[in-house]
Image (tube, rainbow, N blue to C red; front, side, top):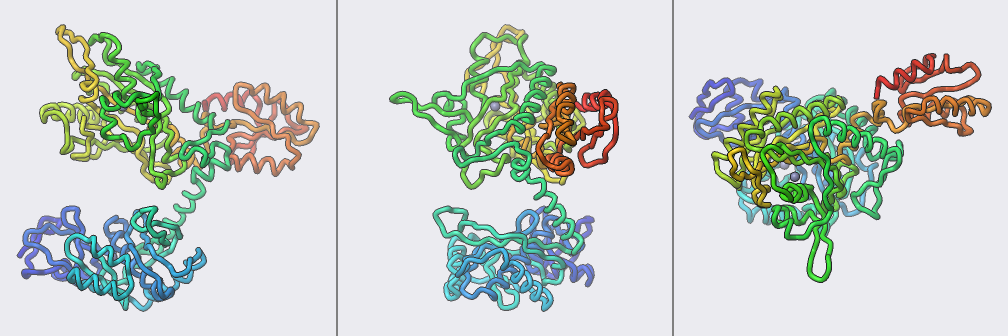
Length: 627
Ligand SMILES: [Zn+2]
Ligand SMILES: [Zn+2]
């Protein structure tokens, strides 16, 4: 039989040859370094037979930043972890141990709870295994045999996994440890050059709160030490930037069990919030949007009409109303804007009509998924609905992309765009979709934005462009979305009078560019590590009077800087302590005011930088330039 290699050349192999056989046929070094076969995006264990005509790519230990190669390495490391834990803690039961982004975990039921301090000991045991060396052996067995085997071992979770597994059952063995596993795995442990256990957490069996709580041990592994070191440094940086930690440290917001997933904003956090609101209002006005305000609650009939009742009902908070009616709190603004459009006779001359509203939305999320500002139940989007004729679609999508690019550039974030096209359950005809998808594609190309294509991932009512951005740590975040919709206007019976004197149904573009303000601020906090640019900084200047006698002059100076956000720190602390606090609070400018200072000569310290003397006029000019 023949397989096809990445350079399109063909490789002749005996019938039933495996990925490893293919590697060996190319060269002994490749066979030694091989970790995985990839075939049209699917991964396959080296030990499994290839098929005639199969396209294959053999990944090796040198593919040290390939996600699939890393996943195999880390999944194999998870098995080493389970082996170590079983040896150190007799009576422990093992559950599952998959690779995840940046690492792996394994879930255990320990006879006695363990603490963080146990991780060192377990890690040492894994190192011992690595020094001894392990190789993996794969075996396919019957369901009954597998069931019996794990029953005999008292591994209840594995028994349950055998019972619910689909397809063939395979086991992987290394040393004296055997796990139920689909694979793929490394040939042996030699490629695992760096490993680290990174943490401990509780996790319910199968993610179900009604089931046993297990102990999850997290770890990561790499093909070399340098990659691990890089990763740990990035992790430390991410911890320092964690918006939940900085949110408290900088006095921006807090979350309370009194209102789950609904942030309570402090005065300093509101400065940032309002900064974004001002930006939104100003730029919307420039771009021809009109501001509207629509209700928070609508009766169920409205939600049935909009389609949310069918698709989004589980995420809606409901409120009883009178004897027989129920109102639903809006998870999105669309219905209000549809009702507004439909409240008058519309002409083509009014289009495009751009309704903007940053209203409060509520979404009922599963408790376990809430996370700081990044996943909340109280959501405020920089939302808008643009009603257009078919001819206006491309231009309006283009303008929205342009607007999005402007916003992301403002924050120094790299934007990435994804175009999602017709799904299987689409409404409307193929001709309609050809037209709308082409309009979105044309807008992306005209704006010269590179984009990824997600075939079949569009909404059932229309294609969409999702906006992602990468922060300073290279992490990718889904932000806004631009969705074209031909269905909701129809459902609400909306029309406009065309130039041809015939009524037409408008298209609507749903778009939010920053996404939710809550989430966006969470990301901004991490992106800037709390050191906001001057225009967003809650306090722009802090004045530190050296002694009691300088307080009056400090306040006089604050008054002269009245157009900015200025504070005077007159606590009875040393000057050094007060300067340090200003640094911890990441205030852009700190002015120390003592005997030698005057409007002509101020001692100005810049955040993270040195101190210099400049005049009040110069300071004002510099502040103004940064607004
Ligand atoms: Zn496995
Ligand atoms: Zn909408």
